[in-house]
Structure formats: C-alpha cells, structure tokens
Image (cartoon, rainbow, N blue to C red):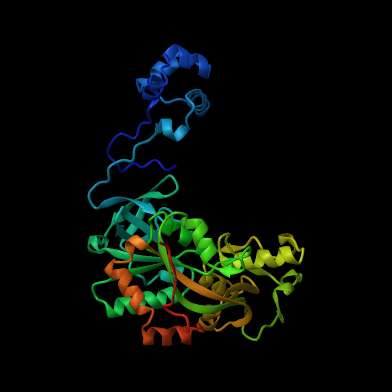
Length: 379
C-alpha cells in the first residue's frame, strides 16, 4: 500500500487489542500465553508503543478469535484543501485522470479510459490506499458538487442513452462507466452506481439477465427495464483475411485472439464454447491477452495486435470491422427501487421511449423493439 507524504494526521497502526481482550475477560498474561508471546509484547502493543510483526499480529488475532482487520487498522488521513479522499470504481493508478461524482454515501471516482480522452475529467489520482481508496486532486469542484447519475455497463448503447439524456435535460448530470456486466451489477449492489447495464446469459436457466440479477442483488428490491437487443460475435479485419468462419477457428495455429476479462459476457461465451467442445484455453493463441471493454477488443484487432476477438456488432460497425455473428442477446438496465423517484432516473426511463434515441441505436446495429419494456419489479 502506498504511503502518502502529503497528508497530515496520524498514520500509525491503531488497534482494539485492549478492548477485545477485556471483552473476553482475559488478562495481559493470559492473552500472552494463548498467543505464545511475551506479556510485554501485549502491553507495548496496547499502549501504542510499537506495531506487531505480521506473525505476532496473526497469533494475537487467533487468540482473540477475531480477524486482523477487526483488530488492527491504519486510519484514513484527512485530506488537504482541494484534495479529496474517495472510493474508486474500476482499475486506477497514480496519475490517472478520473471523473469524481457525489453519491448519497460520499464521493466516488472512476477512471477515464483511452476512449474517454475527450471526456471531461475533474480529478487526478495523487495516491492510492488499499484497493479502492485514493487521494484525488479535485480541480473542477463545480462538477464534484453536482448530483450525478452513474450508469455502469459494457455496451456502447449506454453512451447513446447518456448523451440523449444530457442533451434533453440540462439539469441532469449523467455519466457512463465502461464495466463488464458482473462488475456493473456488483457496483449497483454496493451502492456505487445507480444503474447497471448487463447482458449476461444464465446457463442453468437458459435466460438472460434476470436469474443473475436475482442471485447478485439478493434481498434488495430492484426493477429491470430493457434497453435493446443486440448481437455479439467475432470481430476481424475488413475482408476477413484469415477466413475466420466461426469460433472453432480460434484453435487454428495461425489465429490469435484478444480476450475479455472474467465477468464479461464475451468471456463466458468463449469459455462455454471451449468447455462444450472439450478444448483447453492453451489451444487458443491469445487466450491470456485480456482487455476490459468491447472498444478495446476492436482497437486491438484494428491495430493488428490480434486477428479477432468477441465483441458487439455496434463496435464492429463503428470500427469498420468484419462481424461474424454468434449470439443475439437482450441488454437490460437494473435500478434499485429506492432510487426510482430520482429525477435523473426518471429522465433515463423516459429516454428509453425517445424516438430519436431509438433511431440512433438502430444505426449502431441494435434492435429497439423491446426498449423501455418493464421486465421485472420486486415486491
């Protein structure tokens, strides 16, 4: 974990050792004996004179029947003016341009990808803490103060939806985060986004989206609306110079693949094919070459980094690539019921019936026959 130098405050290791010990009715000597350490070690840690080694900390935690992070922690430092401590969604690194949004539970930052170069950023990652906390330089506080509707998902159709909402409603701030379907759904579950877009086939039920949503959201109340229908398939260079006919050709020695990360529907399609046909990932050149979005797949094929990859038809059309269809799927939007009355959410739902938006989606190869259909509302 990075150790920041531009924070003020106490970054020393803190502990609840004395509190936990007394709750269990143990003396320092009894705890020391159970943990097989010296009594002076227990006394010194409780007094904050020094931090334990990992081995000693584990022994003490086991002796107190608790976890390490419940017993020891480093407090998050206070941010200086113009800097914010935020939770991050998606992969970030020091120096990343980010969009910072204010949600009900606080500030959230997400990275802007290479395709978002002209998107408006309002923050810069200065330091990283743990996996999902960062110190951000907030250089456009007027954007940070806005209430923003965040949509997470991998389909470029979400970009069309956001653009139409922003053009039509000047008081609504909406932003799209390109995450795969499972990441988007988990972000919704955890309250980090207000809308999750997904196209995820459930192999057990043979149905798109609804079974996966139910398993992931559990007891939370939610609503599901359809955005559009689309196709997913193999992308290759225009003219298909390697004569790729179907996914079986991926095992040819002269074919290289660009793959998607785990949790992406494209990755599920590939893995299901390999399993069904008793192929191993080692038989596919490029199986371990992973990217995070449909646009990244298209870019890799366009630049010659791979011969093919699985992505949406809309991306193939945009990059003028050959498209070999494999699946026809339904792309849905998931909302938590407690957010449905939010004006931004209402604007999104209204936009699903907007004729100009449907027309634009159709130019990208989507079918809008189901757009705006309410598929499910939990009781």
